[in-house]
Length: 382
Ligand code: NDP
Ligand code: MG
Image (tube, rainbow, N blue to C red; front, top):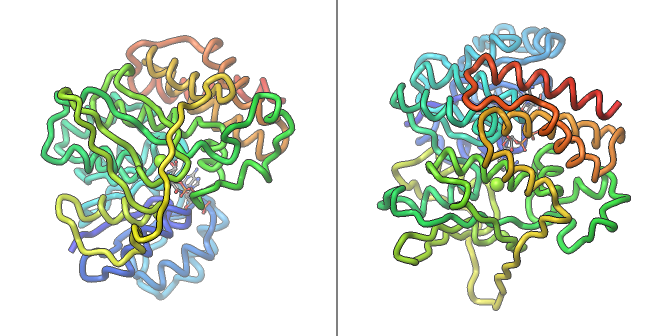
């Protein structure tokens, strides 16, 4: 029996994780759940899964949940401190991080310092501070197991292999809803069109990141830290069917690929069961009907975010943190209709040139970089 806490249980990954837990009650038990403000879903989840503790970031939502859960025996915590307490609570083996953006960074540090293994969905944590997080995990002897489907694929291809034998990894990208569009075609795009992803049903921020291809850029940086790679070893290929979740090429030229239908419960199930495989009853691939797998190179001229992410990764230091913070603000601006679609890479590029490059940032510098970038990005939008 694995005991887990889920940070961001009311989101897309959080709910799918609870679905996995519900299907396999003999294998997994939930001890802690957190949300930002969706108290009604958090309360429902708490009553069904009976964790020891829950936490809400928002004060009003916390009061609501405290009221409704009084007498249930479930402790309700509030604010960032409450979330950090759930990230580090006794009795938990694995913390699944599925909050969105920078908000996952500090709780992940708390979890690692408390000796918890991390099932990592919140890729932004490794983008912000991959060097710091991976060293911290190493020094505390905890594992970071990827939940992101591409990284789960690479991780599964790596079982029985050694990192030194990787020649390159090939991250697959669906291409998003605007695959094949020209820069001109992207001019009038609004949130309604960008929020429609062809293959995956996800939270708003990652859906926009998938439409701009920033998601693949963030994933490249995530892969660099998870698998100890150099920028030149990371490639992206557009594969619209999202059946091959990613590939690893080894020094002898052989390539391993991991495939399956696009269903995030599979990588979640794997991350929670690793190093075992636990039987799963999810829908399976059907090879009785003919189907095709297509591959094409990404268009870096149209999807400039992907290029910007690789540049930030190459230069390193605090620049991936700048990339992440500026992208978060730009995506929010786009969703609020204050910024057009092509304004997103414009804001990111501007921030990457405006902010000072710190080559070896510590925690203090990363927190300051995040804050400063947000201010600069907001000024650019307003
Ligand atoms: P959602 O927006 O659906 O869910 C986010 C969750 O985090 C919600 O529980 C939300 O609470 C909570 N949350 C949001 N902001 C904060 C904050 N500032 N502090 C604390 N909690 C917060 O996101 P997804 O589930 O789609 O994505 C989560 C992470 O997983 C992202 O990093 C994403 O890149 C990654 N990921 C997602 C995939 C997917 O298929 N969805 C696939 C691979 C990776 P509330 O509901 O109260 O707002
Ligand atoms: Mg992914």
